[in-house]
Image 1 (tube, one colour):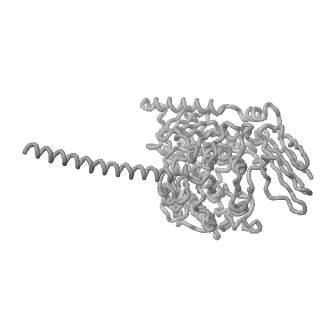
Image 2 (cartoon, one colour):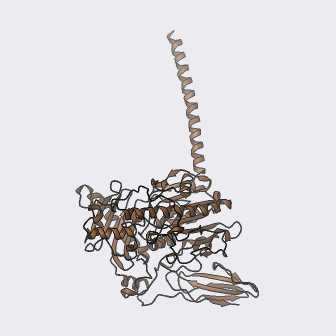
Image 3 (spheres, helix red, strand yellow):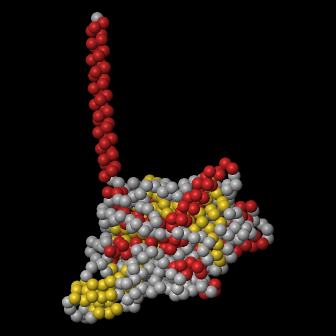
Length: 592
């Protein structure tokens, strides 16, 4: 009996083991199938030549529903987020636009190439300095030019502001009419649309939008004329009666603690959110055109701001309120829809990421790293930022941040944080702050910005203290973190060649190799052998652009990027121009 029981028991155990093995094998197979499916459905497996659309707004904090602020309805951005991925940890390299745009365009830190003073070509005469441009290393080209060389149609509509004059080879089109619809059939495109509605000047008095109508982008129609076409700042005001109202003035606003809760401040908050709603409407117009063209599922769509918010103690500062800006990326076929990616991202990462998304290895000179695509790098541990001159006022501040802590080093501690910038003082909230300061009515948080001096070092726990008001630099519990971030800043300064306390006049001499004038790109060298034309330039790193004007035809709108020998058709005219970034361009040479 015992033998029979044992035999039955052994058979039962065996049967259970067989079933378990079968279940386990089945689970493993399903797990492998899921892994395989997931791997095949990753961003790295996208089309090798996807279209890329950038929707760029200005002076933009995380004031929209996908990032937790439901004050104003943004149906188009909300839908984009629902179909895409949100990135809450994107940081500009500066709290203002031109240096940040230099980083985006080149993949290099502005303070490493002479691009960090806002702006390099303004407020210099008053200080006895010449206007100048950033001068990156000779191998540096704008990211759009690299993509053009790879066959992409690259358009910018329409703000530039890179701290240097872009070469003629930078874009196929850069104008209020630039549009992907002007490309050749089936040509991949990289298109940038800039929205100015959320700019700081949208808070000025009198209040009105820059463009009352959706100026973006009437089928790429170059004959279309809209109201207010022209300079964004000169034509940005209209009668309030014409202004679209997207939000009630009775809305309850969440006023950050560094600003006073007064009627004037609430009025500016109403303007801020109303501007965001108008920007969202214009974003929707561009997305509708993309969908109408049947391009939605072969286009990677980026939405982001050029730095943090427009309010006082936001723009121009390197607190998170000035650096952090929301980003949404929608991938073809809604890949990873409705998810969040918490990795740290810097603006210097954009250029290498674009190359990576198009299957190209990032350039060795780029100081950023790819966060998407075939050459995606390991997640970064730190982001870095710098503040120098803004208009007529100068400070010298550097910052480094990990996911939780921000370290700030002040190179002019004897100087207060607040800079009396005339442009900013046109904002009613700024006027309100100054009035309350003079009357002694600001509380502890609101008055911090107006301290007569500042500590050499600051350390903030940005999770606990998101407005960066409680300095932990002298707290014994945080000395290891202070040392870590201070050492990282030293490493970064040395690596990128940033000399924070270098006077601007010495910076200009350094950029110009000790001369008193901006260097000029040499005229192109041309070799013509039976209509086969080779072109070179003695200026190292110069880009060479050309146009072929066929007999009886007008000149093309775009300059082509010279890469190979040109076969000039009989009776045609060839225009050639060379330009290295930071140098003046050569004269245009004409060959018939």
